Structures are given as C-alpha cells and as structure tokens.
Length: 302
Image (cartoon, rainbow, N blue to C red; front, top):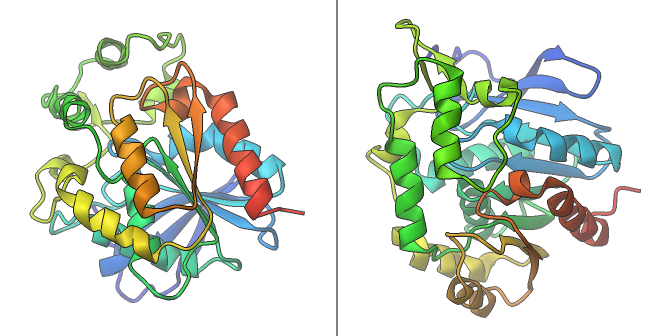
C-alpha cells in the first residue's frame, strides 16, 4: 500500500463526493491514511460508524443514510488494514492502535461524536472511550460484542476469515463461501455489495479486502484474551451506552451480557430477534430503529 506523505498534516481531505456523502481521507496514528465516507450537516450531532473485523465501511451504508436523513452528521470509517484504508507497515492491528486512529478522527469533528461499533469496531470504541479521562464520545453503541465473547463463536469466525487463502476465481465462489458460513441469510442476486469486500490481485483472483496480518500481527490480542482489560476499561466509561444483541448470536452469551452489566451499570440492551452476529445486516430495519431511538434520547439531532 502507498504511504501518505508525512508532509500532509491535514486531518481530512475530501477527494470525491456524491449526492449523499463525501469520500474523505483522514490521517491516523503512524501517519496511516484512513478512508471514510462523510455526510450530513456538520453543525448537527455527529456519529462515527465502525465496522467489524474483515468488513469495510460499505456494510454501514444503509444505516448511514438513515442517520443522515434523521439529521445526524455521519462519518463511516474504514479501519486500518480494511477497505480503502492503508495497511499498517508493522502489522499493528491492536485495539490500542485502532483506538488511537479513532480518537484522532473524532477530534477532527466539530461536535463530540457518538461511536457505533460492530464487533471489532465495538471493542475499538470501548477502548477509546474507557482508557482516557477527557471525553472523546457523547455516547457508545456496541453492536453484538461484549468484553468476554464466546470462544467457540470466535473460533468459527476466525476459521471463516482464514479460509480460502488462495482467493476466489469469481465473485460467485465468494458468495458460496459466505452462504456456507451464514446459511440463514438469503443469497443476494446482486453481487455488487459483496464486490466491495473483495479486491482483484494481479493474478486475476479475488481476495478479501483486508490485510491477512489482522489475524497474525505481532500486536494482535483477540477479545478472549482482552476480556479482563476491556472489563477494567468499563470503569472509565461514563457516557450513555447501548448493547445491540442478535438473539441468535454465536458471540454474545447471556453470561457475557451479565458480566458487562456488572461492570457497566448504565448499559441498555436492545435485542434483535432472528439475527445473528451480523445483526445490522440480518435485520437492518430493526437495528436502525433501535439505535435511532437510543441516539434520539441521548444525542438529539434537532
């Protein structure tokens, strides 16, 4: 990946736009270029969307449009090593590195943002909010993640992400792999959304749009090993917090929710029926309604 010039100290540079949002580059920790979509009125309350591991910001586009329509200023970020953001030269994909990126991006916004993070993005947001004394967010939404996740569910996700190291010959092959992993979700007829999570290499094959070192980097600490620290960081979280849980999640257990409640008493829980770990994709309308109601209570746009 091409590194951004160290002489570029601007926190954000608009590079393209459409009728709904602008595409921007932010400069995060280590001078890493981070891609994002930004939309809405910057004078309104802001929201930063953080996708899960192995995803890209495109997984949030439906939610982003809903938030903009409700009057929020929204920044939808590609995490380091994902999508169109740069890959870490050292392979540093620790939560601390990603939280540093998030804090830098959040500081560039005109208002204190709410963080909405799915899985890896939720842990990143929790880390960013809980480890500092000064407020960096106005509210926190954890999407199907708790500090102590179910190890069997985590192992299944990692096995899927590590599968197909030789890529795919066609997008249909990639769709087959997704369907085998998530059989309850209808197979899409249009593969344009899936293609946003793939990149074509020089060998002509398609590969997932994230750095494989995400699972092998020198500073990698997965949530099962990070549980005690994440729970300890909950002591520093004093903003309104919502946990959105897919009721068929293989990651979030009742014990995990109870442990989070014990360490973060102000957390509310919004359960989404007939949804798994990819709750925002499984039941997008219900998910959107839940977070919009929460944000309206704590970050009213009007």
